[in-house]
Amino acid sequence: MTHLEQWARVRARTNCQLRRGAWYRVVELAPVDVVLEVNRQPLRVPRPFVQVVPIRPRLWSVVPRLRNAAAPPESWGPRYGVCPRCTSRAPLPERSISMRCPTCDMVSVIGWSDAHWRVFEILSATPAGRLIAKAHGAAKRLRLGGAGER
Image (tube, rainbow, N blue to C red; front, side, top):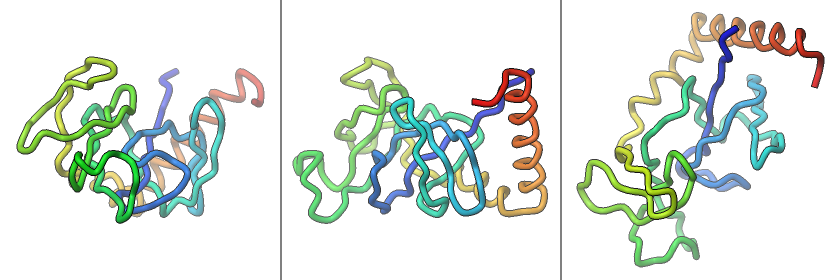
């Protein structure tokens, strides 16, 4: 059976216990909250705090610096990037299309705009989106039912 996954990241200007820009695997998705896998542990987060998509993005996340933030260094400017593979943070070169991660050495495109991910959020609020979510939940229950409850 195909394993259906969803991924979530903290919304750009939200400040919570998750690293902004990093993508986390969705364990459970509900209208009010979402359970994410964070360091191999489940973490419940209010649903409005996160952006949920049906695939793991392979683009650098562009994260605006929060006002009065101590990290990352001020020299990085008003925004920084988060690697889609290892979630390391790095300064973003102006007007570059892609960049190499200084930690894991993977080259990825920089997601200067996240407009292409917003379509999934819009669809999740439609009746068709709710049916897809319901089917996803049923498939997950079937998969877990064969292996026993966790």
